[in-house]
Length: 153
Image (cartoon, rainbow, N blue to C red):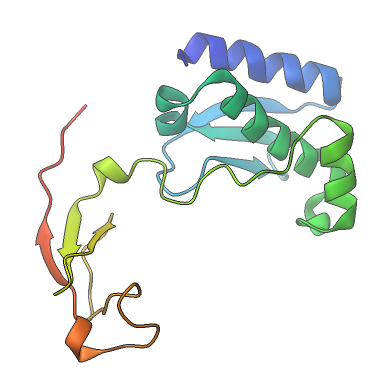
């Protein structure tokens, strides 16, 4: 989705569900999450990486998720109060992402002996084993890390 379209959508949702309450919208550079609700600043943010890759309905659902946080309050977390507010404004409740938003921008790539690929945004500082091969740490499933070739945008 194009950035101006995302801004228009976000501002329309804020005007509809949080009129006159001083909430604003901005993009952020998050690579592991889609959106965030910053209660102190009264700001809802959306990952610029998500906005570049997602369809309008996916962006709308992320924004509604964050608007529901604004409506329910910080202490509501993802509890019953938040779920009720989210459902009332049209959030479907589906899990939108199982992997990082901008995984292709990860700077480290690791491979276990079985060939499973893992990505990290920061250089791994300790030995890590593959969680797909073993639920517990296993020296037989150690991940070998190497710098990734990252495309600069």
